[in-house]
Image (cartoon, rainbow, N blue to C red; front, side, top):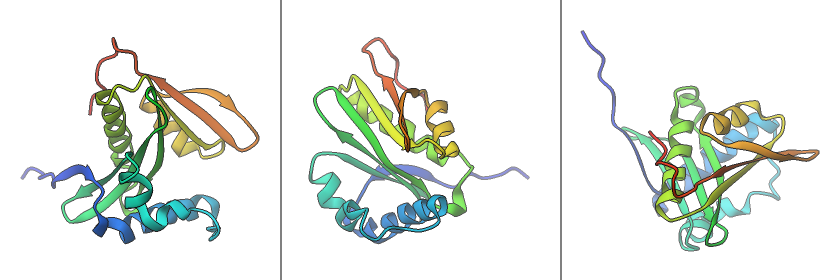
Length: 162
């Protein structure tokens, strides 16, 4: 008997995703930092306004009826994008969904003519660093708290595979 693979898809954020997307992101932050500072993360109070209506991309990954993850691509200028809010539901981590989200955001950046995408993460968040490097990002700066990575999206570069 062979396995069946449930439907997995990426789609744009919808208003009805608000509570679950916020929960997944905050849970991921809590898992890493041990606590959530309630004075931070106000962008998650209204994802539609902060991201989608502001002209950025915010996507959710779904597996059948489950939201397994989130991610956003901010358009900072005509040539530069920034990936933020990549998070995977703890019940689905370690299965490649984070990589699928990041690669989807890279493809959106390529499609929309970005020349470079950057990402910032805590320099001790090893799983995030490994994810971004696996997707082709290279470190370019480090400070006391963060590691900064970038990917150049030259015209000659092919689309990132799924």
